[in-house]
Length: 498
Image: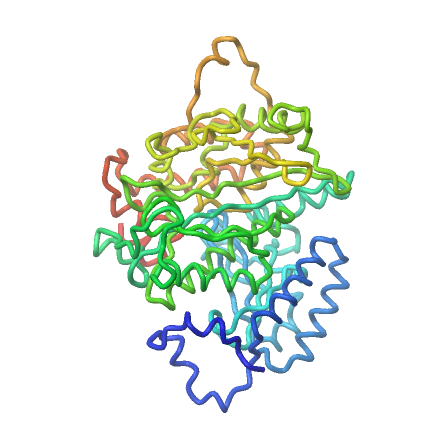
């Protein structure tokens, strides 16, 4: 099958991945045109949204993999406690014969099991299946998300994707309530590959564009990257809405349609993965540090969320304040009441607290507003279909499953703080450094309820370990340590250079 002509322009012929295509006549691996791939991925997404039985979908996928001889490997993904995406490529034939007995060493994943209890299992979430653009991910591969299990097959407590899935499934089973989520993920584009890993040597990031908001010439590097990444998103069934350069130099944002909570969080992981891969093919780096450069706006991951039942938006009330229903305002009140307790989850790195700077539209005020973008929660203009809340304080390096799970459970179950007249008149702020955020998280009984004592302790310990590798005072300059030991950038080699 011919590859799609649209996507060929984002391939760098000097890239190492291109060299592997020598002697193509010896290989016959799956390559699907982008328009056909979009149809396949949208159909798979529709099955998930319709909550078709997993066993039925598993049967379909297994038959497809068995019949499609041009697939060589299946990429199985899972996410660790801090939010890093891990990928294992299984030979297709091996996977088909061993899908019920996939194991991996959990002790090598920071925040997972201890060495003495290292073996964990992976279960295939067959509905969460994606066909991949061959010019970006390589020919002959498909991708599926996995669920992390204990040795005995029970859900692993530190797998927040599994926690979110279980919680939202229980909501739907109880009364048909669905949580809809859409993320607005911002990033920066820098010159050179692996700019973050090279930061300890260079001490700076080089912008590819200084055009600013919406302003970028059609042929410049930033626009080429956005166009290429948006094409990949579209082919993978994201249902794109708009894409554009953002306010800061070399900053971008690509928006896509809301979906069920788990699908929405999956798409965040894929968004960052495909952005990094497309950028790498252009000899560039897509960076999701919240504030990689000072003096300019940072990166956010505004999280738009609503609840619906039988197609009716539960957050909409035409006569309600700002068009929001009482249940919507109750949801917001619980988030604001517990804002300091959950801040570490939504802003989980040392660098994230540079972004909570009021000089750059920082969403650091613990309040809700329809117009003030300095508020932690915004109420966007909406109707019966689009009414929602927007939690603006979420950083793009947070674990998307953990942040959605936290926002959802807090909005539904969080304790509402009694407001005195004095408190109502006083503007409260989120912590401006990770040390205060860790202290508030560790001392929060509500946070312990959310995650359980063991995961609560593990997460706090991980964040403390990162913080202690960095200067306590942020200062005016981005420090090497806050990049080198950032959880999305570091590997075992860099982590041990301390």
